[in-house]
Length: 338
Image 1 (cartoon, rainbow, N blue to C red):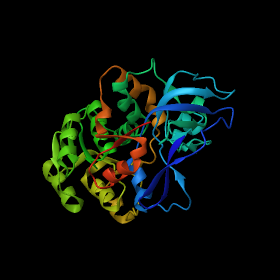
Image 2: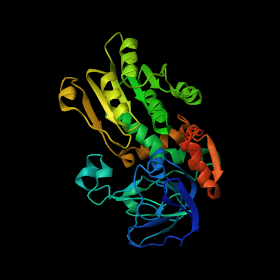
Image 3: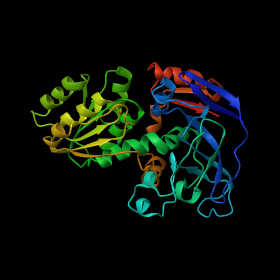
Image 4: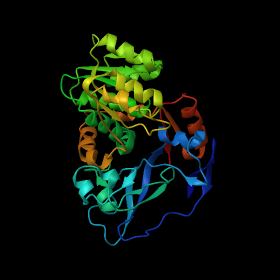
């Protein structure tokens, strides 16, 4: 099969690789209905994460089960399934508390920018839909596997409640779907921090009531101005930089909640400054598996359309252009047809 391999900074290639096979009795093989490029893929693509050897790319996936191991019981051949970027047994103590990305048996799922994918721990990782979705629903189903699940965790971890004032830091796919998630949870005011018109339009479509273009200290000051010098009840940090993290903390009211779901790069917190904010901090790799049944149901019933974050569609053979478009901010998120 053809698969996406990253060799180094801005060196992504399509290569022939062996089709995946069942390795453990708990595995499943999926034929992907579509694949995509994640904003977190840009960190190694840009060289921020060192790639020591050629690395298969892609961790967002949905598709039809082609084969299951002898121990798999919850999914079967022919079903349409969605999973998370970490495989989990969904039975350990951490999974029972809803943190499947900290599962005692967790293992990353990689290589999804390809036609076929092996998913370990299939019983605990995959959730089947009621029926095979129509083609127009595939982008939204694919979004569930990471960016919607992560945006939903951002809102959940920041304790978004009905009537709350919420700030979303970051206007990538996760940030935009964090806006959608906050709206679904009943937030009354949602302030999206964005400098890009196309992303601002989608943020408003998803429920943003205000747009703030300032960043850093100026951005935090603008939030205080908009909230009568109080700050937001919930702030969702969806970037992962030093500036965005501290901006998020400073935008929260005393006693407010700050979630952080952007993969941190160079983030350090001053304990003394943090001490006097009274901020609640909660974040980490999103436990997408926790939310899969609910999010699948919302999409199947037509209540949300997270697939709109895909604003560029390319065949897998043009994956390098997909990376370039996202790197250069010409695309929010690239969908790859396989």
